[in-house]
Image (cartoon, rainbow, N blue to C red; front, side, top):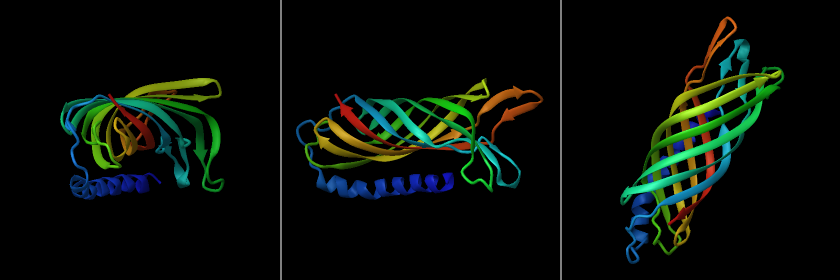
Length: 217
């Protein structure tokens, strides 16, 4: 599943690059279109989570796919380049995947907070006054705070994760755009020592598919 979603991220980035020349021909500047504006983008969507642990015979332990909510702030540096900061949250059941059972058995709860910052290239500007499509890409790094709860016992960890995102802005009115984005958070989760075991995961891909209302001030 994650492999297909990472592929989707690449396809979205490719579509963005192909759309850029067409968009440049279609959208004409209006007034000071290149003026800089702060961006605030509250969003919602789905977080597709990778396995925390892979066991024998195809078994696994992972948080179930969950609703993902958050907000992103963008501060422009120059036209077409902005510094972005993001916070997101997801909570779901913690499941043990068993091949015969299929989707898995719930054994507890999982919560995750995502905090990151990075750089954005592209996107819309406030003064665009017609239906316009503007591609963008983001790259950054931050932290993921995870908590797992099983039978009243909890384990917590905060780990570094890099991220890469791509998407499209669709102008609704001057100052407001619909933002669609796929973003892949890449990193490990180290829960330290649990009894005689050291619970550190492999490198995980956690993919967020989101839609946002982008407000430009």
